[in-house]
Image 1 (cartoon, rainbow, N blue to C red):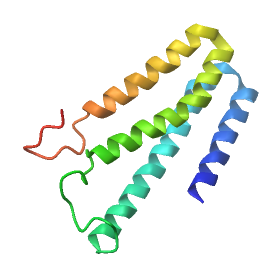
Image 2: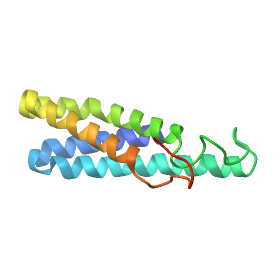
Image 3: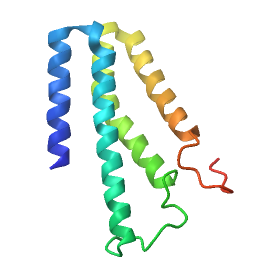
Length: 128
């Protein structure tokens, strides 16, 4: 159900971009990414709650299950790569190679910032 909701959001974002033009593109993309991020965070919270209650696959917090875990970083990377497909198409259609380069530079930057953010790191554990 969430996937269908996100697909509708993406379709609406792309339609709004067609109607509003490229000057609103970054605001539309940012809004969509926020919605995806909210969905991912909600799903992670539900999984953690289920795990804390003993109903999930993880019996409790441990290595690899915290907010800065490999799973979260991997999930974030997958989400950005999924979003890269329509963003690449938009960038290439609007500005050819330079648009594509800007899109991928942004994707790399977002992933680097997320990977290096101190949010969710456990004291005494080196994430890098």
